[in-house]
Length: 101
Length: 110
Length: 136
Image (cartoon, rainbow over all chains, first blue to last red; front, side, top):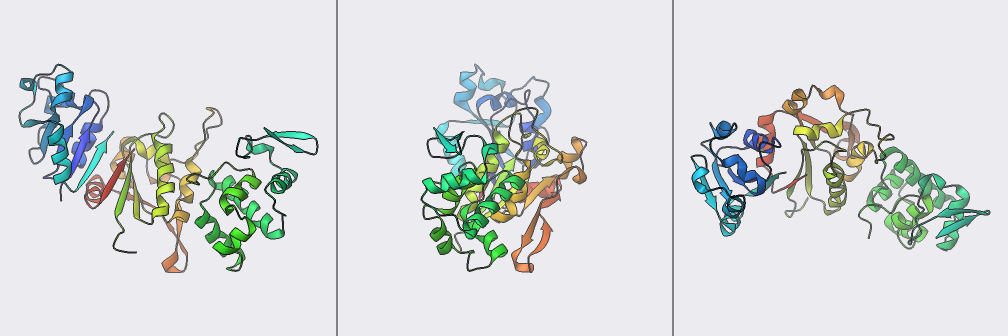
């Protein structure tokens, strides 16, 4: 009974990612899209935001990374990329989708 | 577009809902009712007054089923039922009665 | 309720007047109530500010829609979950929220409170029970 959580805001602008992580349950999936992808980058002040959430599956939407000039090499450990088709698969294989606006 | 109420004009939109809710008066209600071809009886006034009170308290016009449930509770099942409400206001109790009551068109009312 | 009834949760995370989200959410809830689903509302993060007492918008030229929450009971929307941690982080307690009651049809129309204060962990459980989650 997993939930797909989408986060579309930069964690430097709002607390959507932090709130999402605080409400996600083990086995849930987090997908960072739009400005949300900044939350998946290493070497930032918020790089430890995902620490302690190893029971979650964390993805970023690759076209949004690419658009912002972020190389997949900059991603935090444990973060995977998906394309649009992968986004659809995630939505289809989880029980509900919840947007953190 | 405006109604003429004893010589003063009250603005309304293209569907006949008044623009400024504080322009409402019983005389205006009668003018709008005339235009809607409704002869205002005590039952009509009870519905209109209920709508005005509801809007005053909650800042929305109630949906039809909410209106009917409330009228049923207040005035009994003879008045508070769908059929009777549509006899009073043939083009829809919420829509037509709200217009006469001087309220905005109800949310979700098509 | 028939088997077609699904659990719908409207998630409110924004303060009332800075953006249009809160008002839009409330309007969607009122319209959606016509579909006879099992509807709950969740208020967390800045969304808890939507329910505070004493709102008066006369000075900002916007509609004060806080009284409209008190009409939700008429629409059979009687579960308003408010997250305790979100309140506390903002220096608020349940006493700072307006009273929202509904009449319980199955209990001789007894008046009952619609607001239920829940912990963050309980809120996460509530999310996980839903069929559909609508975010605002």
